[in-house]
Amino acid sequence: MTRLCYCTNVHPAEDLDGILRQLDSYAVPVREKLGVPRLGLGLWLAAEVAAGLASSPDALRKFRAELDARGLDVITMNAFPYGGFHADVVKLSVYEPRWTDQRRLKYTVDCVRVLSELLPDNAAYGSISTLPLGWREPWTAADDAAALESLTELTRTLRSAPRLIKLAVEPEPGCILDTVADTVAWLAPRVDPEYIGLCLDTCHLAVSFADPMAAVRSIEDAGLEIVKVQASAALHVDDPRAALAELREFAEPRYLHQVRELSPDGTVLKADDLPEALETLPGDGPWRVHFHVPLHAAPEPPLRSTNDVLTEVLNTVSSDRTIEVETYTWQVLPDRHQQDLVDGIAAELAWADGRLRLEVP
Image (cartoon, rainbow, N blue to C red; front, side, top):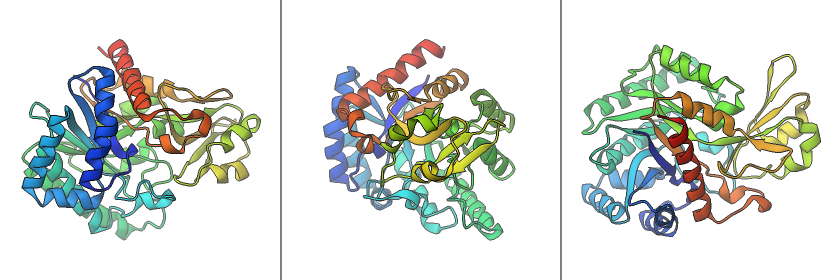
């Protein structure tokens, strides 16, 4: 059975009291708006909060009771951002610490301990998504070895956890593991596929201009698992030169918005951020921009979203995967695209649920 949830990294709180207040302000009203007795969460905890819960069984039990009382189920965790995800400027800092750094390992181990307690009793497994090792530079052979050592240590933790928890490595443009192909090539010969697989973020997949069905097949053919799908959509524009004003509206200062251009000869050209793309990419072919746009509310022409990629993935992956709606960019959308957050999250979940019910047996 597909497990649908939304990711709480859209909420900025980085202490337990603040997290509960924001769940009361948003998650509970979303559940009530959808008319469901339980609502799935993809929980994001900053590293300090995760460490505090992991080290205090009593605090963790109390937190679980608070979630249960609100009708909220934690079915997955997002351990990509370490902290400060809603700072004025995030950009490249979201990729720190890398998997070469022991802080990354400790944070992820803490999340394993937290999720083992919070996971619903009837869940077959839990999942934790993580960054694709780190930003692409600097990266050396020694870094590669250090990252593998950390993932090997994490695997030992996963094997001994009281619940089945799997790590989901999330390819992202500009990182060491930029694409699904990069991630499969790196993971397949190195990790235990029972415990480590992929988080398939459909915005990132779309930005890479990869064929969705071929990407899914390549993961399965390598003996790896799509541990979870992050349901997200990128910006797409067929003629960037004719949409410069509309694109500039999305060039905001908080997050990195990588851009890829599919040139007429099939080459994929790259820019690390939208302002850079506006200055350097030729605009001879379509662009896709790493900007998570609401699933249910496509931007106005000449822009559009890549919901077609998301729908194709939902039609292709196994129907028992965790599907995590992950639009974390609500607060940085252009003014004319803003809407009430409760209404927006509820509408995205309804949109995704409708396609799952319609398209996935």
